[in-house]
Image (tube, rainbow, N blue to C red):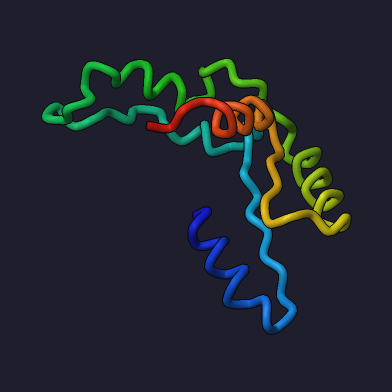
Length: 106
């Protein structure tokens, strides 16, 4: 998505259209309620991690999740202050931003 955002910034700049990529941290939602009875295919290469995956998908990863209304208010607040091309916002987003910025990627 970051590359798409960068391209859109370049392509739409002549039309005075600003593009902002919102990098979302952990946000509370009902998406975690749709995993009851879900199983990985028995032939999956990741079958050994199935339990851990399902626990995380159900929101059991213990990530500090921000309330969705608080998240929406914060994103609008940042957007109205004319941010740069990227906003990091949501539960623990600063930790991910730090890791991406300072840790080696290859």
